[in-house]
Amino acid sequence: MSSSYLRKLLRYRAWADGLTYEAVANLPEGAASAPRATIFGNMLRTLSHTWVVDDIFRAHLQGRAHGYTSRNTLEALTFDALWQRQQAMNAWYQDYAATLSPAQAAEVVAFQFIGGGAGRMTREEIILHVVNHATYHRGFVADMFYQVPARPPATDLPVFLRDVPQEGD
Image (tube, rainbow, N blue to C red; front, side, top):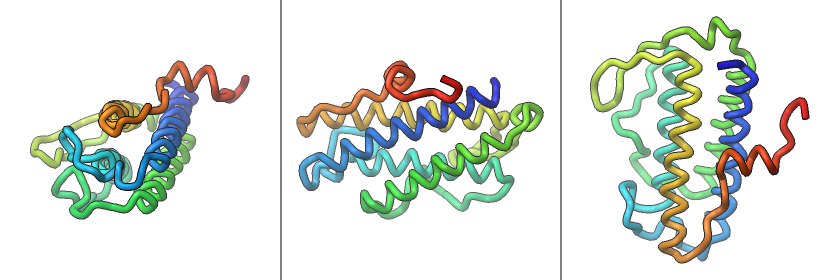
C-alpha cells in the first residue's frame, strides 16, 4: 500500500470522526450516554472503545507496553475529553504515516492481544486496521442514532472522496 494511500485513509478517518462527533454533540442532552441496545452500552463508550484500540495499536507501533487490560477505559470519559483525545490520536497517526518509508510500512510488528495470543501485523496493516475498526464502530454509533431517534451523518469513503478536496487535486 502506498504511503499516499495510507495518508488518504487517515484523512478519511479524521473527517468521518469529525462528522460523527459533531453529530453526537448536536443530539439532545444525555442522548450520547443514554443506555442503548449495543455491546458497549452507549455512544460514548463505543467511541471510547475505538480510541482505546487506537492507543493500543499506537503503543505496538512505538514498541512499548500500552498498559491496558481491557478494550475500553475503566471510567467513562466526557464527550469533550474523548473528542480532544480522538483528535490528538488522529493527528498522531497522520503524522506517523507521513514519516513511514515503504520499507518501514512493510515491517512486521509483533504484539500480544489483550484477550491473549500473539499477533503479527505490518505497520501498514495496523494503520489499515485502525481506520477500518473505527469505520466499523461508527456504524454502531450510526445505528444508535435511530434509537434517539435522529439521523446519523453520512461518513462513507465515497462521500469523503466526493466532498473533500484530495491532495494533488
